[in-house]
Amino acid sequence: MTVFIDGKRINEVSLAGVSLSDVLCFARHDEMEETLAALRQERLLRLESAGSPGTRFESHDDFDYLHVAVPDFDDPYEAPRAAELFLFRDKLLVFSDGSPAADKVLQAAQAGGAIPPEKALYLFFAHLLESDHQELLEIEEQIIDLEDELLDKPPDYTQKISWLRRRLFQLKRYYGGLYDLFDELEENRNNMLSREQLHAFHRHTGRAARLCQEVHNLHDYVTHVREAYQAQTDIELNKTTRVFTVIASIFLPLTLLAGWYGMNLPMPEIDMRYTYPAVIGAAVAIAGGCILLFRRKKWF
Image (cartoon, rainbow, N blue to C red; front, side, top):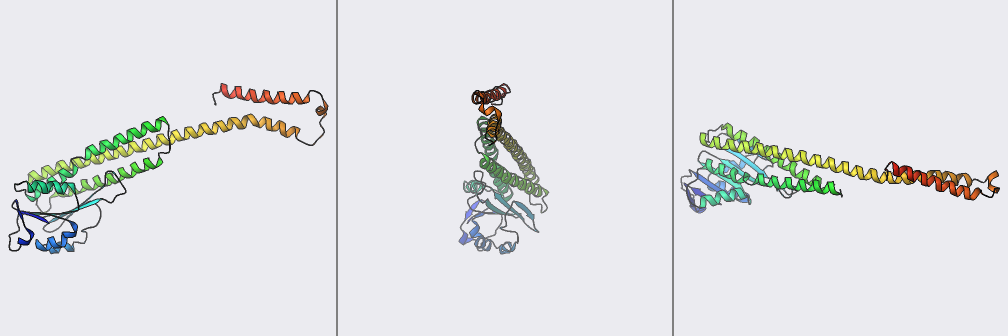
């Protein structure tokens, strides 16, 4: 647990008897109970929705509760990293396990200078979103590379396409949740944010909306790539099917001849001198004619 009061770092053992105003507190989730007891906010432990998954905003009588579930940009199967924030008029309590955004706000507070709780909240989301646009550009580059590979010679990319779609779906849900959170925060029901901070958070709302739209566009792009891959796969399958069709078409009349003369019936031409060469010539002529016809039609 790390606590700052009026910009000065306070040892948690010396919190007793201290006027807890203009407080910034950073702690891990497993320290929540101890931290809230030290800050005389044990009632927050009874918040029914605390710790539940998903990004959301809740406005209570004298504080706002924010839960942010940040997905792993590299692995959509990893569980999101959660950060829980409690915003009072004179306090901001941040509980997270290794959140880079929380760590950067903590570093700024340790560097010196008092940071008001509402400004610390703004900085948290500013650091949270600062590199997301670059992350989406990298995903776009991966999709472009995948499309080029598919157009060259499509191997089995079903798993990779499915992985990208799952990744983008998770990000779409994340940015949609952030947009709703910022929209609720801008309503400022408890009047905890100044006009200046509301204007700043409006920029966050716009940025979250743009990121959500970028993810939506990338999701559509992946869908088009999947359709192109499916079309290319169908073309390759059609080529294979056409080869087998050509082979079957060539041997079908030859099979008819074999079946005709394989019958155990007396045929008048069997005893003729040139019947055998004639049948061989007919078979060669039929096969050669079929091959020439299919070549002319560019079937193979």
